[in-house]
Amino acid sequence: MTNTRILLVDDDIQFLEATEYMLKYENYDVITAKNGEEAIKKFNASDPDIVLMDLKMPVMNGYDAFFKIKKDNPNAKIIFTSAYAINNEEFENAEKSGLFGLLTKPFDLNELNNMIDSGK
Image (cartoon, rainbow, N blue to C red; front, side, top):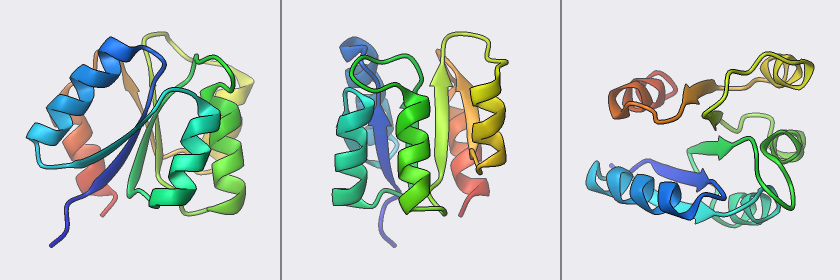
């Protein structure tokens, strides 16, 4: 069985590296991107099983990247990651468009594993 491939998107380099290390330790294949624009390119190039996407990023934020990916890939499984409480129209629209989940940073690895397992 092949490993679950995760596209990890965050502009916080320390968070990105630490999380990538943690996920690789759990035997996930990890691809990283530092903003929404890069995330779309890497998504199209690597066809990941799950996307962990930060919301607040330069160049293109997580919402814009989410809707662009979902437009071309309606079955994409995208989980937003955020250190902030979210309750706005964009988030509701994302939920209606098939948002796979939300993890509050710093997230618990078990929580992530459960989400990934539920999506298989």
